[in-house]
Structures are given as structure tokens and as C-alpha cells.
Amino acid sequence: MITSETLSALDCEDPLAPFRDQFDLPEGIIYLDGNSLGPLPRRTLARLIDVTREEWGQSLITSWNKHGWIDLPQRIGDKIARVIGATPGEVIAADSTSVNLFKLLAAACALRPGRKVILTEAGNFPTDIYIAEGLVSVLGDGYEVRTVDKENIATAITDEVAVVMLTHVDYSTGEMLDMAPVTAMAHAAGALMLWDLAHSAGAVPVDLNGAHADFAVGCGYKYLNGGPGAPAFLFVAARHQADARQPLSGWMGHAAPFDFEQRYRPAEDITRYLAGTPAILALVALEEGVDLYLEADAEDLRRKSMLMTECFAALVAQECGDHGLTLASPADAGMRGSQICFRHEQGYAIIQALIARGVVGDFRTPDILRFGFAPLYLRYQDMWNAVTHLRHVMDKREWESPEFQTKAAVT
Image (cartoon, rainbow, N blue to C red; front, top):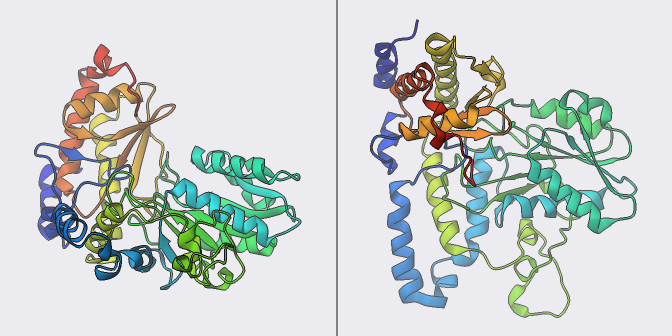
């Protein structure tokens, strides 16, 4: 049996405990939604004020050179590379995950002429499928997006497939795929492999080069705490960079953007995956989040993440076992990301009732209650307090209140 005292003892022994003070967390809130939007690192506000007042305010346009604005996408990309098992020069921070996905899918298809299929799983995050559909509508010429159930991916990788596009950690259940063998299956069939790391980067160990991945995308506003709408990132394995070309041939991806040549000539390195002018303030905020993450020990982060999800799942079973909450995540902590999910037909209303009590999780249609566990700022005691609130919501059927039944625009 798990007790409050058990969890308090874990907090006393937690090597990551000091990091909590690095975040500006609202008083009285248990924040279990870092898998959707990470909280504000205290240092970020100070840095943004400095950049706004001094670099933008005083140095003005000279800051592109004087303060290194022009190099931010590459510099932050190299830092993110350390998080996802890549090497310097293989990652760049830019645009959104969706835009970067379009770039990489187009590049992958061009590298496999004659193959007309983008293969993904039917339960993939919808925007990934939408972007792929948008690309094939532009390409025409028989290109298609083929979706299959996750368990049928291996047999679906035929000689028609140009690229396999999968999400490493499932957004709705937290299930984590084994990256290396899946990538090997794609390569064995002559296809390329693209991974979406939206729920992986900063949450679980990732080794793109160890898995021989070809491409990857990810976002900066979840576990990397880069702020709402933070720039995303993309990875292109060094072996593909000389030949892979992306279709959004904007001036920042040019080999010499300030020569203002009339015809496009791509940069020879990862810089070719830029398009328009970098969003400096957003990149500055992202860099602070990434720097903070890199100060922690990766093994400590994963160890705490797994233990927290195990404790939370056990507590829900222990305290709320008779209320119809069904575990939707893999039972084995080693097979899921840093989140735990449950099913309930009143999932949306339950989450709203919890938010009203100061426990912030989120809902995913049709019936998923999703809770994210970010080891940098969460305490083990938070698990006990959150489940105590959940038990009250379920015992008293607080979710039946009309105010929790009407869905807001953002769920």
C-alpha cells in the first residue's frame, strides 16, 4: 500500500528536487499537463526582458551579428541534439512540428523515387496524417498516405513505401515504440524512417543515431519548456544531408542568403532546412528551457519519470478502483512515455472537475484522461494529493455538475 509518508520520503531522497525552484509554478496548482505545455522557467522571463530591452531595444538590427541571433537555430539545434541522440549539425530549431514534417516527408519521398506510399498508423496524431495528406495532394502522380493499425506496420512496409512515419510515444495512451527494430524493418524494405518525437524529447531517452533513424521532428513547448507555440526542431541524419532537399526553399535556407541571388542554392548543411526569418524571442525562450533540461542527469529523469507513473497508476487503483477508471497506458512503465492515461465515459467532465480543484491534466477524445509527469518540477507528494482530489471527484460525482459538461474550444 502506498501512503503519503512513503511519497514524502521519496521527495526527501530525490536528486532532482532542487529543480522545482527553477520554475514559476502557480501556488496551489498540481500541474500534470507538461506533456501539452511546460511551465515557465524563472530564468526565461529574465532572459526575455534582457533580450527585449537590450538586444532588440538598444542594439536593434545589429543584434543579428552582435548578439548572434543569426546562429540561434543551429545553436539550439545542437543543444537539442544532445537530448535526442544526434550529433552537432544534425538538428535545427525552426518553424512548427507540422511545417517541419512537411519538409521532411517531401525530402524523404524525393530520396525514394518510384515509391509512392507514406505509411503511418491509423492512430497517429491527426496533424501528422493531415500534413501527409496535404503533401500527396501537391505531389499527385499516384502518391498516397496509407494508414494501418499499429500491430500491422511490419507487414505493411512493402516496396511501395517511400517513408514510414510514426510517433515514438503515443499522444493518447503514452505507449512507446521500440525505435531501433522498427527503423530496421523500414530499412530492410528499402524505406526511410521518420519519427515524431513530440512526446519523447525531454520525456524519455531517445537515441536517433543509435537506432539509425533517417529523419525526426519534435516540438519545444512540452517537456522542453520552451513556451506556448515554441519553435519546433527537425533532425536529418548526416548521411542524407548532401542529397535531401526540402521544398520550402526560403532565403534562410540558401547557401548565401545575403548575396541575394536570384535562383535558389541550398546550404550544404542542416541550415538548408530553414525557410523564413527565425523567430528570435521564441527561440530565446526555447533555449532557456533546453539549457535547464540539460543541467539534469538523464538517468535520474527517466528513473523518476517511471516511478512517478507507477505510483500514480497504483494510487488510482488503490483509491479509486471502484469508479470505472480503466488504465489506457501500457502497464509496464518501461513501455510508456512520461504520462499515464485512463479511460472513462465521463473523461472530459472529470478532468474539468479536477482542474477546478487545482489539479491540471487534460482530455483526449473520445474518453481519455491524460496526466503528464515532468520530473524536473513535480514532487512525489503531488501524486498523493492529485489522487486524493480525484477520489473526491469520483466519490461525490462532482463531474456531474453542468459547468463541467460543456466542452471548451481547447480540451
